[in-house]
Image (cartoon, rainbow, N blue to C red; front, side):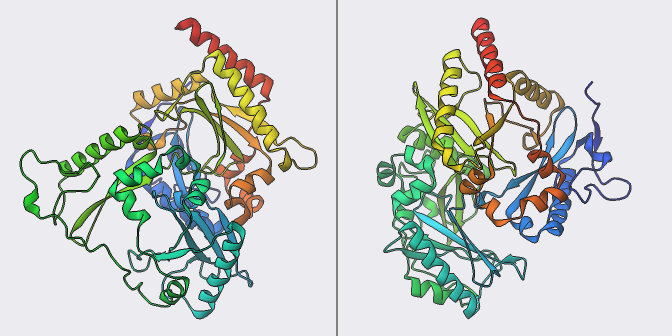
Length: 473
């Protein structure tokens, strides 16, 4: 029977909420948690992670999951490290270089440098030795990806002690290859119609020599800025729109009210939807306010900024295989209508058979990752439709926070894949000693030791669900 959840708003009696192995203390493992307690659990858990490996504190974030049985911690890759395209190390192994595509709609790859000795990402200024190591790493990166005629942008450190982010301007096609969902967007049309995208594609850049020189400064010298004057405050009158059709914000200097922010974002979503219905579903809209100007940032949603292994189309639907953002050895299959951005929750019998065909194609394409003759896909974890519905009901009944939900309402099938394939698509597993971490972090050990189903059993269950759905309809 489901346990009765008591309200909990603070620490347990001994003051410790998380054990050394990242398990929750009994006082909070079966209790209703306040937002304050959830944040406290995350902070304490991150401190535990840092004691296991300092790098984990920077690469991972924690999610508190509440389901009818218990509460527990999940380890999730931070968004900026989910799509690391290239991983390099300095000759002395003291520095790690992480290259990842920007999550903005802009043709840039971002470089961050981790210092193992200091257990943190580098901040300005860099020493001569560190700058030389960055230059060597950039040479390796350009050689691997055949990057030529590249230019650079040094992202402003905000706050000043924030990690250095060196942005490398690359070809639009390379950016789309690194973030495959961008291939579903008509970028040429969007650049012409949308000022925030046009601005980023025409952003002023600097040479490699200038970029390396600026790394030696305590603060990044300002690059050439857009010198257009912000619209005067008087432009806003009764009946005026806050956003132009090209998504320029028509509000002068000063703080935006909550109502203005909401209206700006709503208008921007409608404008993007008119351009392509998929856009407001894959993009998060943010408002950046600086230099007496308000501008829109179009940022790829965390749901779509992920390493996509492959995408197959059957009968007008796209079968998407991507590496999960959780620290677990799974590739996730979801089914989407990329015209509308809608994910399927229930499958028809036809869609179940298409799922089987997509899976066969995935296994055939990835046979080269097979280890010692073992199958690339070792087994499956499937959350049945009924369990997904029960989770939704539990969340509504118990008034749980959305951030603590245990899994998606949409159909998803998890494929346990071999380590070679996992490391190919997710650089995180090439950066850390996963075997050692599994010994010290219970949530990660659990994810790597979950009981698996075999395909005939999964297929039988999916067919039965589809038949039941069609009968009910």
